[in-house]
Image 1 (cartoon, rainbow, N blue to C red):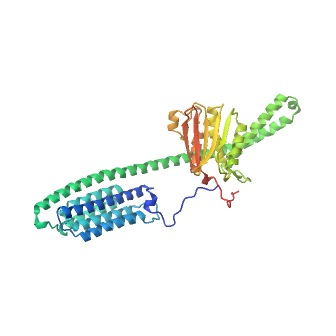
Image 2: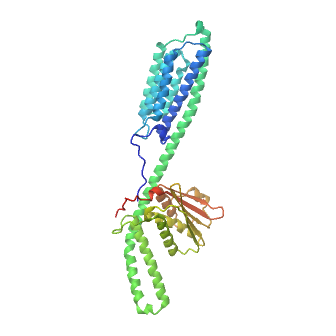
Image 3: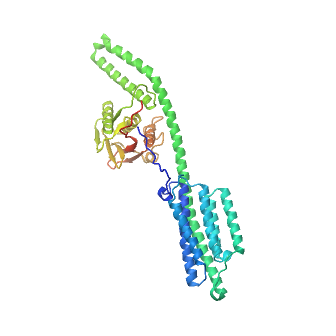
Length: 444
């Protein structure tokens, strides 16, 4: 069976194409958005000071810095990156460039006397949230040095006519604007960054949970494989004894006993088939090649076998697939489908429905019943081990295995209670993970 392939990008993907798949990418996008806000704010501030207060500023040099920030943003968004994650060094370099641009603008507009000098605090706060400790302290030292240098080296603001009153009013207005920008951006971006960090922690917790569940499945598989080996000998012995009984004249003269012996032989054969399936799923069967079939043929054979060996009163099977791709008959997939059908039969012996369909490259397998449905606590904990309404020790592992096997195929399982009574379990799997190419040959 062909595994789902990961799309490869030989030259990497740009940040805008990745759409914030990782926390590092999301944080870099936050910095880029902050830089866009800074560009707009700088343009508006320069325009306001020039037109309203008629302050003479080196507009060409300041415009060059603003254009440089725009080019940096576009480069950061569209540059192909080989690594999917944004490193600490990349974020540090971005903040350093922002500090350099701010320092240059402050140098051209009054230096440390410019109230916008306190925007350094915003850069340091972001660094404390996003960077490692040593890079954060490095940025603290750099901003402190820049502040100190600006107290001595800068181009002073030139007010028309040397009006110091206007200069003081401009300083107060600048302080107010700087305060609003600082607190507003800190609240907005700290909230977003914390949300990204919480999302990362949630994903890590999910990964740890999956690792624990997969370890649990491995242990169960080892136990099942060992039990299958141990059951092989007694089942073979029972088969021989029942065969001898079937040929004994005393039993052949009693049709009722002979029929019971045949029923027992059928059940022993079924047990041997189950044991063989367990060993095949564990990869321990020898001398058998995987069977290449069509998806519809696989489903039809599965349904026929399940209907023949289960005491279902009414079974509605509906296959609405338009395409019929070629697949390798997978015993694990067959087992989990039969598991869901068995659960539906336990809950609703009178009727079970099974629908096979496909849409947008996804295979949908829906199993319905007319039983009591799932309790609310079962729906909330669906897919967790030992969640069962049957009250048997060790129960609830069937659906746990179903969820994990479907997840291995790249799919997902959803459950719901039907409005007219009963439950519906739907397994959705990518058709690409089931299909084989024409030149693919199953391994023996």
